[in-house]
Length: 307
Length: 280
Image (tube, rainbow over all chains, first blue to last red; front, side):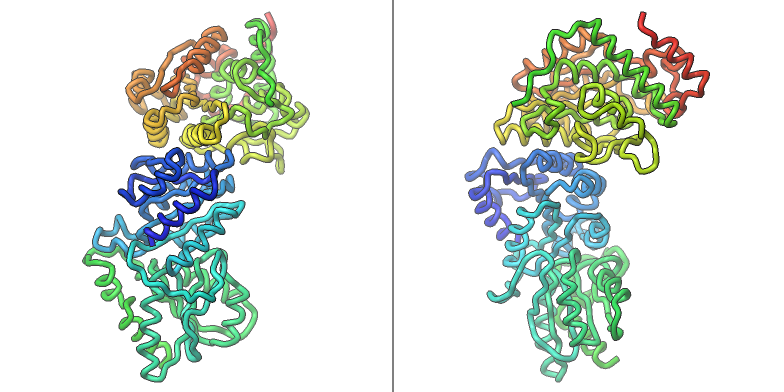
């Protein structure tokens, strides 16, 4: 996903002269081609995220379209006040990209996990909070965000995430898409972890359980028209996010469901428990340990179906 | 095009403007119960020099893309900035009659741009204004505009790490169109700034961070003008002007008394202050 981001940024830098890329001292060689296209619009801002975020706000208030790129915890919670005040309050059209989100850097420890960013950032007025499932969705959202009059946060994975969307899907900000049709349960998810859900859905199909899987593309704004449609079809939902169980997608859906008028929907939240992780391994190991890999998710699907 | 700033204004006229602004400031502070009086009084000359001599701005076109940018990074000085903007013609002075009233946009700190002409950023939280001004200066460089960017900081604000992050990046990027001015009034909210955090030697710190640093008397218009001219002449480094000032300047019983960070004048104190602020 990060390579797709770098490639798209290079294309965008050639297309628009108002684009600037600010990196927090990461992406070694990743942006070499961008730098050939627009050397005067690339800034390694050092390991100084607070300044980088305020600086981007200043640039945006002066008519540029800055994109900030660094590892997710450092471009979110590290400089939260600068996002809140400089970016969100000013409605400075900055695009904040958090790379290696969720458990992408699982083995690097809790400092590098991002399991709170969706929860925290969706409380900020005027900030869209996105989590594309694959590179195609990322590119669509990035392009739309750069034309929007307000700021956007996009959390992405690292590398090797599989393509999940089909060519006919309508991708963008606040646009949900069905990745797999089904009839018993509905999984509503964000981010590349939806690949595990698709595998799990395939596995339980062999046991006669039909699971639909949809990508919401983010937690704010929610595609409420899509949710209404799904509510008519599925009485049982599962939310899925590579994020803490508190405050993220699952919570956003529960808030929407709680205020919705209509037959009750039961929702099971799937995500990382409310704890820091100490026994470390890579992303696959950690997903497995938390029951968030395909076999673990398949177990959850069967349990919800049987309940 | 932005009109050139009013030039050839005499020091006597600048002093007269500063006096008028101090009178209005203490009057408004008393009537609207707006604090931070000491912090406002210490930067009057700096703001007058900027708005009447230095900045390339047109009050009739406050959003002209080619304008210079001034950010009050020490945003608790907003009450004096509002007076400056009104006197400079950004909006009618009568608008300040709403100062501090419920529903008004004029309170202790300004809102984001779009509500009060001339306000470039909502910098109520310290440590944001300089990095935002740096971003604006770098944007102007990309856009090939001659815009200069200025940020007025407090000494207490130099406690914030983001100020020093901005200082390091501005130097590496050689943003010579950026000027920071520090209203060095030696106090922060609850103590002597040098005792809370080791700021001294302040100018040498900025110099060591790669800035063109100057130290001046922040109440001396000729010194301010010369320092701003020297900053303008700099072609490599960002500039900082460490302006030695007196908190509460202009009202004897407020000078260097940090209680006036919080207090507002009662009627007797207002009368005594205004008596001292009469033209000589």
